[in-house]
Image (cartoon, rainbow, N blue to C red; front, side, top):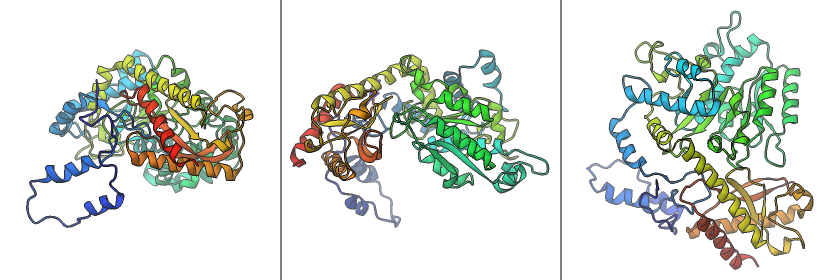
Length: 505
């Protein structure tokens, strides 16, 4: 069902020796040609394919892009040929209703509300169960836009934040300021949202995480109480369901209880981890997501659509009125036009890709993909643990893994570098800041060499290690490609060991 689009399974980059400077010079011609260039497909596009990263390769296990179902290629031709614009029913007729159906399917998976609810809400043109946008960033921004306007509604002479702005809204409600509260592992798009919504990046109040990279609920509770005492409006509490660095899922039920107890908007960023809900084995980690006011998912991650598909869902579809915008000439209030609910105006009918996957793969297909990817991550842990040369930076909850190579001179006798037990932080070797810096430098060197070689790939990040209680460079593995196998995982570790044997003196 999934295909490599004709790209070799063996190489991530066909011309791995190309340098960034070479590409800069190749594509630095700012003047338009004075004549037609009919050789474009043979020249420019071939050069792009030759020197691009092949994200669909099964050994590309460091980023969140992956191979796509084979039918996406002919379907994309249809979407391009139709050139539908789902901002308005006049330019996206059937595709508008197909989009509403796809949204309803996923909404039901996340929230599980009664049949009567969907029978009434799904076809209603006055509300929406969710919106489709270009990605998780816009989806998160939409959710927090709704949260802000609901937090500061019309009051007295104040006609609402959507009409008179943030400053007058705070003043009308007697607040000294406003914040959004969430974990330190929140996606960086939250900084963009805080900036755009008028509270600034400093208005994003980040809470430390525990040893499992889940937000510390006690500290979050204390932060809410502190904001109340200081007369600071809490626009939303944010839960993370699949951190982009860690794959970790917050205790969503605990955050939901805190939000309900304080009358706060609860948003879950499940852009990456949302599809875990399809797994009968692992959906327990998502308990509490059904209590979220808004949820973000990304179609172009583990829902396997092409790039450009973000999703924002609302538990109460009537709350979209907080951001609804209309126009007499195009987006009328009583119409089925989806543009009145979205931050973006014109946008393609990418929901066709999503609808196709939901119909063809269904819950069992998505569940099987989630189970396989998590199983492969566990296989990788077992494989590198057996070498005795790597240590986990966290015990993976889902299909993202952080680990690092530890040179022989830093391994303590009797320690098990790969172990992930309850007492791992007590029994693991504690190293000095200087030692960790040397280890980090070695991991950077190795990861750069592996990337340049181009046969296998993992990414890297710098993050606080609960084991070391210091920030360390960690190798980051993301396994979601259905074509990835145990052999690809084993080859990745073998590649790293071969590189390290030549540089670890």
